[in-house]
Image (cartoon, rainbow, N blue to C red; front, side):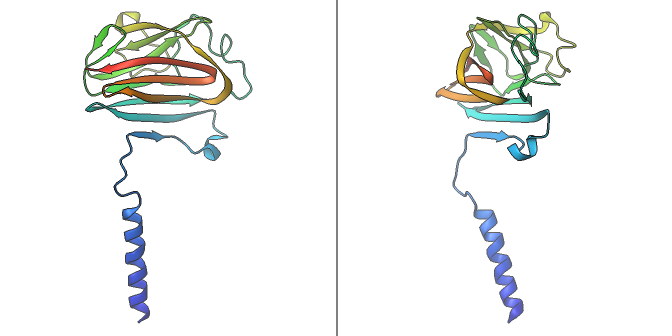
Length: 190
């Protein structure tokens, strides 16, 4: 009798675990370290992906924290190429051809660099996604350079983050937020 109870409990537990969230279709996935675990870390590996049209937009990055520092113009200098994160180059991967600004870009994986400015930023997609910082950055490998206007916010974003905000069936805004700056740019899946 006791053996049957244990079997029923085990089967119930397995059923509960496998049905958790059944039927739920989530189009945006984040893979981040929980805040409590990340509190002691200087920079944490992070990833976000979202289904747009018939493909997935995926961004992998290392997220530094403000930690009381002056970010813009100090830690991240103005008018210099920045890896848009920490350590390895931030990567943007899309499974179909896409457009940024007026430039068509083949499906693939690219480094996402920026050049921060006080009034204007330059967003760069570069062929060489597998590099540390901007050590091996070459302008000749740029696929596109796009001028964008940063948005100043009241709320401080302690840890750098990316968001993918779908704006249409085949369009999305990629938004980088850190400290009191938000930098958006648009992607159209072709």
